Image (cartoon, rainbow, N blue to C red; front, side):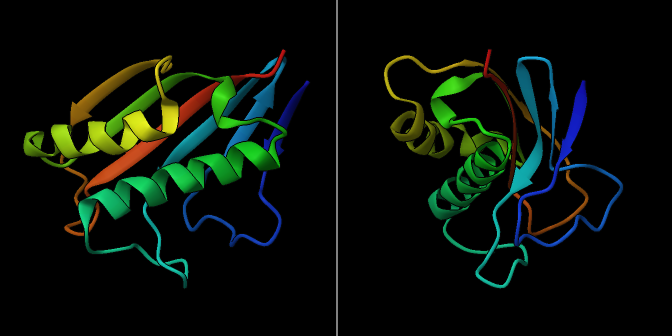
Length: 125
């Protein structure tokens, strides 16, 4: 069974995607960016951007019945290689000593305000 997840109270995506899909024992979270209180793209301190993107991943996971500690794989996208160190600092605080598998790449988002996007796969059994 495949279930599309749309967190309650969050705006519908403006592009054709589901925030998450639950299939079998897995939850696949679409890429999440940093958002401000109004739901727009957050622009500012990069550490806050990473924390916000991870908050959004966590919120989508929760809507699917999953937690951050169940994440088995993360794909992270950064707009600049110079952002790896500050990204890792925030990421480490959220995933601790036993982080999931991860791929991190530098990409051109085509949007000047987006510097980080994070997607995740969680195993819920």
